[in-house]
Length: 81
Image 1 (tube, helix red, strand yellow):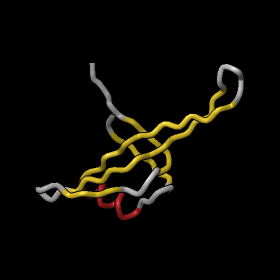
Image 2: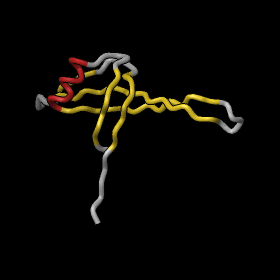
Image 3: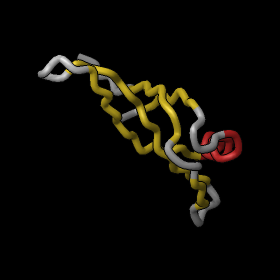
């Protein structure tokens, strides 16, 4: 039986992306994305729950993320978990 590893995140950047270059010249960009959902707690009150994801982008994707994204930007991220 085949397996599948894919995640889709739609959220907002918590801070500006940070890019660095490895000794071989490849780019790595790190940034965090927050997603928020509203749920009722046990008492029946509506509460917001925020989940943070740390994202690592590589190569040309890393360079584009660093160039076009900034704190507060809404992003759609798709990749492996």
